[in-house]
Amino acid sequence: MSKKTNFFHSAIICLAISLFFTPAYGYERENPVVRAVRKVGPAVVNISSEYEVRKRSSPFSRFGDSLFDSFFRDFFEPGFEQRYKKSSLGSGVIIDGKRGLILTNAHVVEKTGTIMVVLKDEREFKAGVVGADSDSDLAVLQILSESDDPKSDIKSLLLPSVEMGNSDDLMIGETVIAIGNPFGFSHTVTTGVISALNRSVRAGEKRAYHNFIQTDASINPGNSGGPLLNINGDLIGINTAVYAKAQGIGFAIPINKARRIVFDLIRYGEVTEPWMGMVVQDLNPDVAHYLKIPGNGGAIVKGVEWGSPAYDAGIREGDIILYVGTLEIYSSQDYDAGIKNFAAGDTVKMTIWRSRKKRTVSVKTEMFPLERASELAYTLLGIRVDELSKMRRYNYDIRASNGVIITEMRQGTHLADIGVTTGDVIRQVGDMAIRNVNDFEKAMVKNRKKPSVVILLQRGDQGYYITVKLR
Image (tube, rainbow, N blue to C red):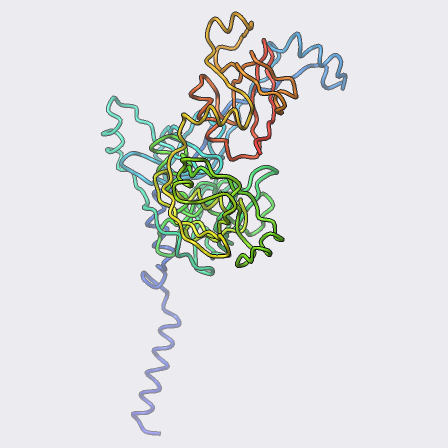
């Protein structure tokens, strides 16, 4: 072996030994996850809220005597109501530093009194709710100013923020990062991959969420409302802990779905669902087979309101909805989920099946016209309402100060069958308190697509919660 060859081999061995024993510094340890967390971490906030819980109690309860317990509640309730404070904890992410706007989950702040947000640099601020939507589980908060000029005051805070990314091009298997405050441990980072897309998750018996991102990155209750990032540090979702039995499974709301909802919450304080003026229902598989519908899927149009956007676009009763935008429709639930991706005023391209042919129609959506809300209430509930005037309070011996009074009742409806009558007062519909007719009309529009709604009815000095089917 020549001297040159020996020298070459020795050089390779020395280089290998030096690389093996040299510690990794700087760029060798700073991987994309580190850079993404460094970029977005300052915009992640810890949210804590405190609210009051009232609980009626009786000294007879511990003895199991229901007779005395009932007697005690009837006569001594005001003085023996226990009140105590509970707190909730979650996460959020600042989406607009100039205005101090924070995006989080609705369930993090749904029962809130005082809301406090803490930044990574340990600055602490009070925040208020700009708007919340329980159907999507999203809420927007705003940091409150203590000065007379809130705009300049918030700007001077120099708050960090994150820009919304794109969740339409996500790939199963790509790396994702979750940042939040699980169990109170602030700014905890977990990583994983996207396990699945377009997941439907049921939370409780009556609520289901659709089009979720599924990930194996750990998401616990304290992570709720925090950001889900891709490897570049782009905001692609809002983490939510809605599935209590999950082990190693996390879910996030796609940011493209959240974007429209956030816009509505900031602008209106609530989500304005686009109106098309048609009702759809699930398609019977036998009918789908008979009509030779591709894939045996779709939702059938049950009815179209004259003069509505759907009617003007040429959609008619009996048409089969195959696609809403790019979303393939297999049920009426899919249809509802697809429509929620659009705002009032958007043009929605839909693929329908009619006379065994595919057709494409474009529907220009609108906000539901409030002038139709009165007829909507009569159709769904069988009632007409009016303002609660002083004269009506006197004539019907009404104790309530807010609400609307039922002035007309259609016989044969569920409300009529259970004894509801004219003169009764409606004080709440769903989660909306009713002060006047305008509130009632907005509540009917908001709840019109739900299968049922809970109504708080008052007669005299007694209040009753009633569940009414709308479908």
